[in-house]
Image (cartoon, rainbow, N blue to C red; front, side, top):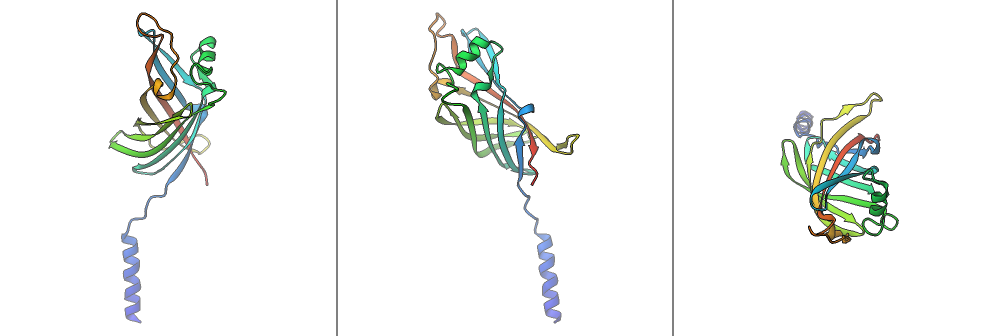
Length: 199
């Protein structure tokens, strides 16, 4: 009997000594406080910036474990806004995004690398016009969670990358002396705010 009790005590002590694995938390991107922006050269002399006003998606990670982060982000192409209606219509056309046929841009993460004190690199597949290529998002964050006035936990992060639009079949351009009206390289910036998904 005493041996059984000692064995039970030993098992309990061992179980308490083993750290419990952190539970993965689920977060939903808040479209009202998330902006996906881009910058591209115009006539090779200045930058044109724009945003996609609708970004949705989900994020999962274990607190304190940046390597566990997974992200699935969807951006609506028809929501493009450069403040010039005629230009936005052109971007929605088949010259560029063809929003009617390809209504979304999609990023799906695959792994985390180069973890730093202030962020990490998130490697994943970016799909534009049904063309998928691997990209690396340089992420700052996520921030420590805070509670909003309604008691919801929120986190924020910023992700940036640069892509070549021609890699995704966006080839349209008009030749000018400097080379073309629109630059090939596009800088992408995503400012994300996410709300914890309640179980």
